[in-house]
Length: 345
Image 1 (cartoon, rainbow, N blue to C red):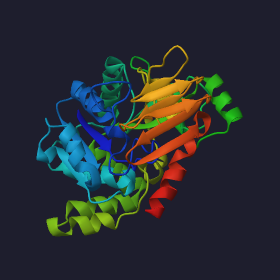
Image 2 (cartoon, rainbow, N blue to C red):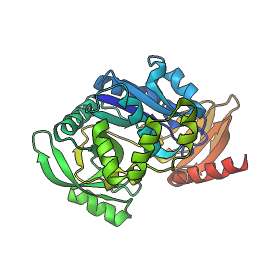
Image 3 (cartoon, rainbow, N blue to C red):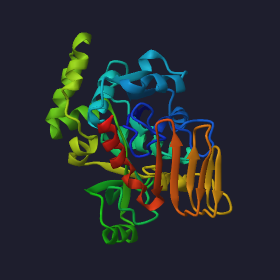
Image 4 (tube, helix red, strand yellow):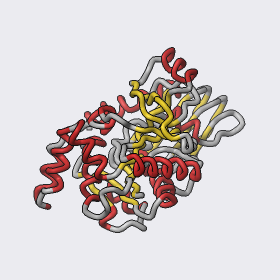
């Protein structure tokens, strides 16, 4: 098996901890000595010794610094962000020149928070074996434990392989409203779509030719590009997700329910769940003084002190890049505010 870590992202949802030049996957969570990216790499290495990383030119120097074990040829650099569809096409072209076209490839996000490494390896090993056995794209879906409205869902169909619990895929569902999400959870037939999938170069080439001719054209363009033309060709690609451009169009997909814990960390409310708290439910980092504060997420990354008095369920972040004060339950709006601030600079 081959592993490809997608280490892109614009860093807006966890601003100002994360920024376009230093996105979320480079951050260390919960006092960990390793970043999210470094932990993803460690998990990938338990799965295979063939690991590649796709990242964007604006912060590739940080990615390389965090992964010193990898060589120059192990990094696939996007000239600029063009969505996951484009970066996955670039990865497939890169791998096709170095490996057997039938070897399964696991595509992994760099910024997910996972603790159960053994469960991770087990799930992706099953997916890799199924992809190779059936010649199909295999997803790894997350068993929902609450009626989430912020994730897309994968609807399972019939069980194809009882021994490894591999299902056919019935359909994809967009982010539902709360009542619909409760129905999905209660039925037991739905998994969160975490953007994990496994397939070989040959499998993806066939899928692109059949269901996504534009991606097939992009693949051919990169495959035949002279080095001097690569950047111009890549920058001409549409900025689109791989789910929208390909995965949700492919017939005959399979899915494996994950056997590991998983968090997306898509907001500070999610981040709060992943970190440790004191007896009042507060998470504090840096020079911080609190008075009558509960259930807060507060980080100070400068030498000047930060004081918070009489505020519960808040997020307070101070970094050299900015200051954020928000209600924790509204922290999903941080991305929008960050983009507006970015337009003003």
